[in-house]
Length: 374
Image (cartoon, rainbow, N blue to C red; front, side):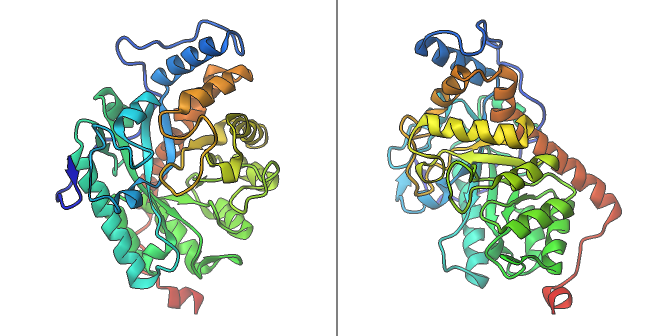
């Protein structure tokens, strides 16, 4: 059983790459047309598709949830949380982002320190579960992790307060494995949008390969980030505001803008943002696909983040139920493969390519918030 006092760092993994091929013995292509078959047939077909194109989950609150447990064993199974290795295998989760968000009220040095503690916890937990988990803090093929029978863990997103208004801290967090940062809740990424320092932070994130998460950001911040960023941006927990008026959900004009720049809207499986049923979640996925395009929609389980989940989507094992609903609605295997795996891999590959190109042209920024924002 894993103990929170366990120390050490996990082995590194290579780059995120293309849609994975089925493992030996796994089914690949479906044999019936869209929407055909009984509920049992659709669920069986959903398992077959997910075996070939697993879920890259955009948001898990597991790191903070594990802090309150005196011990746990994610490989054997852990009933105190919504996410463990057996349930992820049952749900065909191939990769997931472990969020490093903090409770409200933490800022300044306390936010920096708490984020560092969570990064250390992520590495400790992954190393303590080598048969189930593998860290993917550097670019490389997550498909390799899957073919080794492991689940790839990507640290992030973290809150912008974790930077302490310092680009040096951003670089240090990236060096420790951070893969995404949420641009909200700070003076340089506020309701008024990105300041000049905020734009410099975003350019440095592009140079490093850290993804910009815009869930919960103001409309002006979303628009400016879409204009400034050379790498795709994502909304790690956003559904369609046209269907449910939650402040983190995106209106159609921002969904269209996100799709136009190749960004990614990752729809959360939460009752508060999407509704109480699998059908409600599928309605949001339909809407985002229609407005932003099939290349710009993804999934965020949002498990262990302190939120209620729709019926039949209560933990990380339940993704086949959602895919069966999409099949019933006529979604093609190609669009489902993009939704579950392909779109996340594209965003990560493009962010890595942007970073390598930027590092050839641009030195690390030494700008300070006082120099840019007065």
